[in-house]
Image 1 (tube, rainbow, N blue to C red):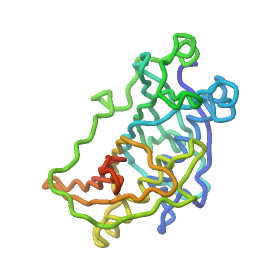
Image 2: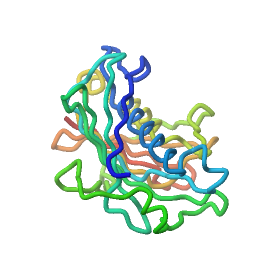
Image 3: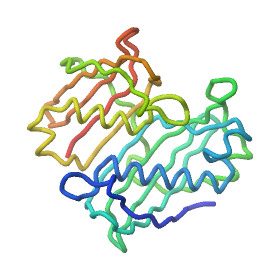
Image 4: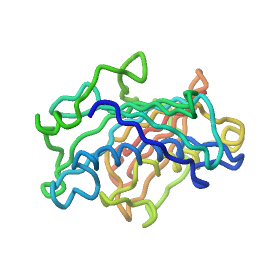
Length: 242
């Protein structure tokens, strides 16, 4: 398999208060299609009991050009690239008919659910995914985000049951919810954020208390840093800008 194409509708839960596709909504749809693609290859969520393997995401980079409304049918193209034994990149292009509405790049590792550790991507798995030389972004990679030097504490948050996914930790898209809650009201209300980058570092589990910090750079980039309150380990960094 090279480029995998899938038609999917924008649901009501994927739009914002203005009935426009939200950033979390488009990431959810991309994640959904990536899961369907992996399932077709025998490495989806339903295959975990048999394979003992699950894909974990390390980074997202998203750019949105247009925001369709509820029930719009989108075509999502996705493919893997630059695969090696340690991690895999998966890129996306999203179309409304022939109009490119969003693109994204993501970085994944393969997790052994029985040994509770990251494992190598075997040549057999690489052969099934068939990575290709195509890049969603010119810089061809998702870059690690650096923790800002100045952090303004916003709040502590206790991880809830609703935040947990099938991997028994906070779902990657929930961190975007945390970031939006940390933004000042005037920023949240007036910025759509056509660009988002998210870096995941350590998992958060049910019962963890997270400390959430906010920073605003001179380039009008808004950065939310999420840490474990008990040991100060970095869970994730979310960068939002237009």
